[in-house]
Image (cartoon, rainbow, N blue to C red; front, side, top):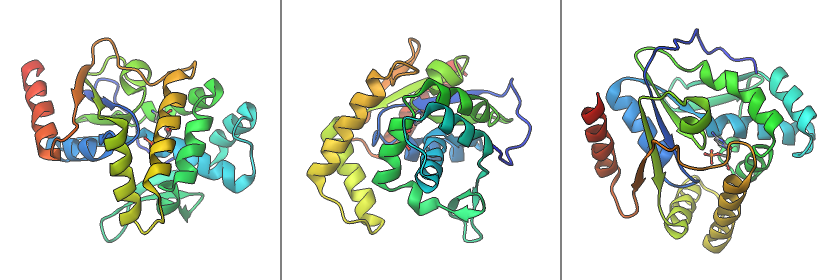
Length: 232
Ligand code: DC
C-alpha cells in the first residue's frame, strides 16, 4: 500500500491493545496515545480501507491474489482534517464515514481471513512504529505484528454490551440500525475473527486480560497506566 507514513524506528516502545469488535479498543487506544504523547495505529481501519477499495472496484472478498494486488496499488492516507477530526483518504477520496459502516466492517472481517491479505498489510503496519512510542490497536497486534511490545492488553466485554456500544455509535453517526441485527453481526464477526487460520483473534500469552464491561473509559485507562508504571 502506498502511504505517506514516515520512516519507522524499530526500537520505539509499543503498547498493543487487541480485542473483539466493540470492546472499546479504539477509544481507549486513542486516549492512551494522547495521554502519553505517542503515535496511534488503528489497524482495523487498514482492513476496512482495503475492503472499501475492493467493494469500489468489484473485487470479490475471497479473491486472495486480487486483494493482495489491490493492497499494493491503492493509495491510502490517514490524517487530520482542518477542523481537527480524523480523516482517511483512499486514492484522494475522503472515505472516513464509509469506512465506519457495517458493510465495510463485515467486508473487512471477510478479507482479513486470507493469509495473502494479512501478509500484504504487515509491513505497512510495522512502518507506524516511531519515537517516542506507538499504541497499536487491532486483533493480532500483540501476537503477530508487534510480538516484542512493551505492554500487551487484551480488552474484552460481553457480546451484548459490545453490540449496544456499536449500536449507539452507529446511531449517533446518523445510521439506521437495529440492535438485534448488530448483536447478530457482532457474534458472526467474533466467530470469524476467532476461528480464522491466520492470526486469529486471541490473547498473546503475555497479554494482560482486561474486561472493561461496565467501566468508564477513565477507569480502564487508569488501570492500563498503572500497569505501564509497574513495568516501565
Ligand atoms: O477493529 P475493526 O472493527 O475496525 O476491524 C474491522 C475488521 O478487520 C475486523 O472484523 C477484523 C479485521 N482486523 C483484523 O483481522 N486484524 C486487525 N489487526 C484489525 C482488524
